[in-house]
Image 1 (cartoon, rainbow, N blue to C red):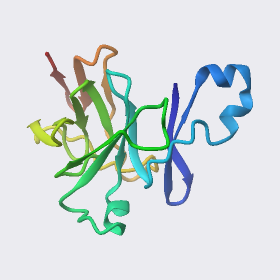
Image 2 (cartoon, helix red, strand yellow):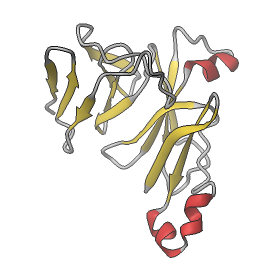
Image 3 (tube, one colour):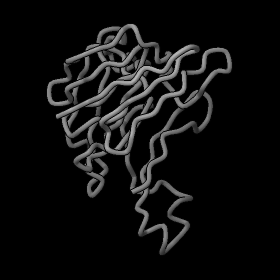
Length: 175
């Protein structure tokens, strides 16, 4: 699968998912809605979990429009891309998520403000590093005045690095 979590038209972000095999057979697949994924709200980030599920983090604005407090709760919506029209499960998290990076099948790293390791089974923050600044990104739309710092997670998802002006912080994850 291929995903696009990006800007459509100000101020709307949108998440789309595509079947790579279908795109190789018919490139027009990439010009349309793809698999028809509908997270039902504007999203701030999306990623593939270690177990193959596709997870979408919803923005606070969209949740507030649905009567959910933007300060207290955000959502992670999980999709099985073989049946993308409906979220397989929804997890509420009591903090802003921003960009997410999956660590394993049960955890994502939420990067709004500072890194927080979130258990996606319960929506609970299990560890956080408030001394590491990861910016305030909640959209694919970036501002030149407040860009997030350079960040990366390695391919096996065991190490995450974020650069500051005078050092690089590395978080190491183990099972």
